[in-house]
Amino acid sequence: MNGNDLREALRATMTATRTPPPMESAAAVASGRRAVRRRTWTGAGATAALVAAVLVAGPLIAGDRSGDPVQAGAPPQPTPPASTPGVTTTPSGAETKPSWPLDGDGQPQEDATARSGERYEKGRQLLDELLNVVPEGYTKPEGTARDGIPLREHQAAVEAHDSWGYLASTAVSDGKGTGRLLAEVHTPGNGLSTEPCKLAAEFWGLGGDCHVVRVGGARVGVASASGSDQRIDQWAAYRHPDGIVVYVAQSRTATNDDPGLAPLKKLPLNATDLAALTVDPRFHLN
Image 1 (tube, rainbow, N blue to C red):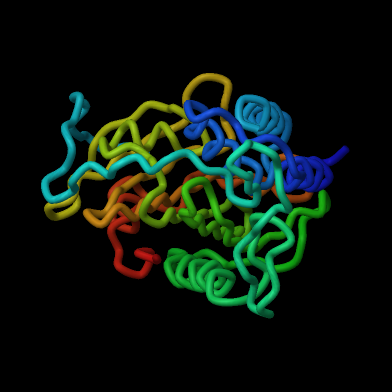
Image 2 (tube, rainbow, N blue to C red):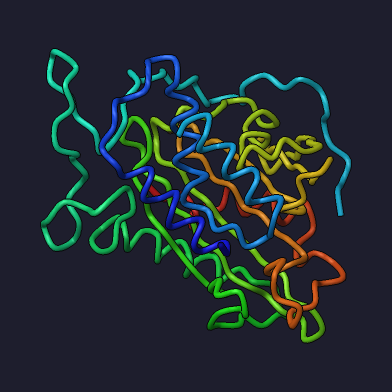
């Protein structure tokens, strides 16, 4: 089974009608749903992490490494009641037909992922904005890698508590190697942390070594890979005052399973630029 097959199998598991999880599982459900949508283009490490998420749910610059309080102007977001999009129940707890948001054709979505309509277009917009910030000197390949993983892609999917997640990714090449840039946006009600480095640690459950970079008045968590999980080399995380969360990430590799794509020798963006993109209004999508 390759990465794409695994993703489809997990998506099928997610969309199956089943008993909703208990209330205390809400955070795990949200994490699992986010993990299900992400392609395992970085190989076995990503596959193991993705399976784990479903089972429980279903160069750096100096910065402030202290335990950071919530940034000014960003009030804590209340935690909504636990819910599982796509599954409804009667007062007695009996399951009824799954209910997904309407797609662009006016019919319910097949699963959590939008395939047309306003939310789908937001995912496409995120990819367009990501392509616009690829640094000079890098090309943006199209098509697919040998393992079938698209070199460009975008998605929009409803998550727990009816928050939406938008994901965009593009391969970038300097002519000698190929890496990848990614952006992920979560609309208000996402249940993600308000503290910069905790927020960064929640990105795909990567953890990582984090410090805070100031961008104007904003405090952004910038993290780098640590330990055995090397799916992403570096990423930045910012929670806007209105609760929208933006992650921007980069990797020296475009895919772990295509020997024809040599990795980049250095990351496309420095830590300051990576952090600045998370507060860029172009990525502030609701």
